[in-house]
Image (tube, rainbow, N blue to C red; front, side, top):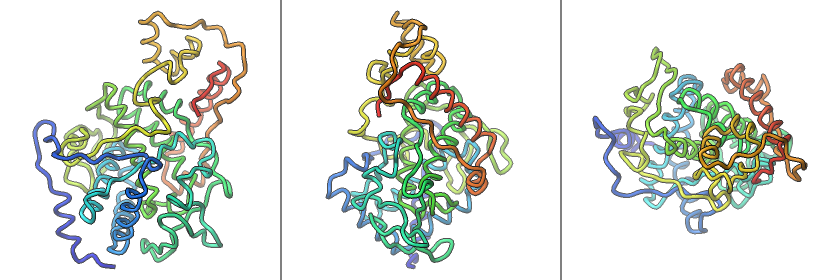
Length: 383
């Protein structure tokens, strides 16, 4: 492993100008695309760069940082700002090797019914399930990689349902979370214990450990979660921040320090400013469902008024002001395609990943009721 240059590089990447107000605008912006929207040249840049990072020991570095800080950045309000900074730190490291590197994200909504069948988890992109007795990843961008943290082992994946992965959370449910969450404490709790956790525990292997950053899929997954946060911010929550801290801090604020980094929370709240010099491109596989609250495009206009107002309060307010509310009577047809129930996280998996069982159960109960209400109303999901 070659990390002789890492100390000055780490210092350079961590340094920043502390400003009293919002950080300075970036001179150049990296555009993060959905991974399936990349050109062959862009994917080659990513492949070559992360192979170089592996040779230089950077995957070991990121896996170790995530494991060391795992207990104090999960289950608390550190979760979203820490991972935003962490993933951006990875991207900045890659850009030191190749300035053209731009981290992609995986639009998991397009594949939530059967994630294992996604082209993202194919030999052309991230690779699929592990093979053999050790469940080693044998194809994709990290094919036959030997990881060195916390010990020497092949990169591992071990899908939660044999060669399949049970359903994740739908875009419609996450959109509901975004509309019903007015505080960071609520938004973080719901996001961390829904799609975030289920993706880690669906792929399993290295992804279900505290050193999950061994898997490049970790970065695409957390970029996806970060994109959802950025859209929630754009919908009236630009600087919404509150909730429990860690390391002796009872309540976090915008002035709180992000653990490991020297930044404050305020420093990472604005994409395109400070060191957050990136933006998200719309995925071709999901045009407007989250980024623009449009009842017609998302199909919410067909919901009975009581269901709409229960699960989508902002859309309910909009419909009421536009005088477009529907009758509370149930829709008299059965949808040809219904929302599936997302998988449940086992007690063993919760303990292994450090999830709060009460929070996970609360989210599972909420998701179950959401699916029941939407299916009973005859809602036809986008995917």
